[in-house]
Image (cartoon, rainbow, N blue to C red; front, side, top):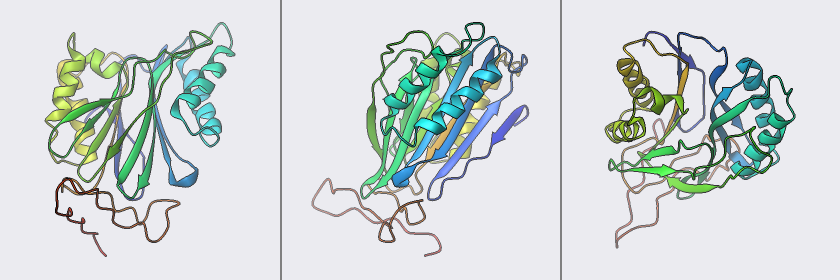
Length: 268
């Protein structure tokens, strides 16, 4: 896709894709970014955010540094965002940035991938189930850097085979027009069984089409896809960092009298 940067992301056992659609104004006062970090106990941290500052590049660098310092200590996403809020408030008054975004952690379990998410702003994470249903993940929270006691909360869900988690910055629905949030949700519902890379390309492609190739500010989208397309099964996580050897296939709890099929392991 023209005008995009593919952000290198690798997580063993999952399909992951992150891309940035470059805007005409560059970084400037606005900056959209993402980060993916490996955490203790086999967890992975995911952050997508938008910084508003006199110097957005400095705000993005600060956010990444604080995230990597606190995410290894705090287990709840809301606690990590609260630490980031304190760091933003201590920034230079001339450059004090505001940040909106989503911070989520993912962790393999016997039933699939457990996701916890906290929002700094209104844009929720979206989960497309393998049957085509879409749910929102995360409760609206305070933007960071504005007040000392932000309203932040955690929400969780479970991903299983064929499910896809989509994280975008607030610039994405804004670029999709007045009904951008509804358009984004409909778009995610129509993603089908494609890969994480195709999901990201579809989201940014819709932004580019809506803006006729003239996106004002950078926008970022990140997708995490659980391999397989069999409903009701868990994730094979044999290569997940920090997992034990017997963490290979995990069927979900049966919804009926029959046990769900166990997904095949490529190359096993």
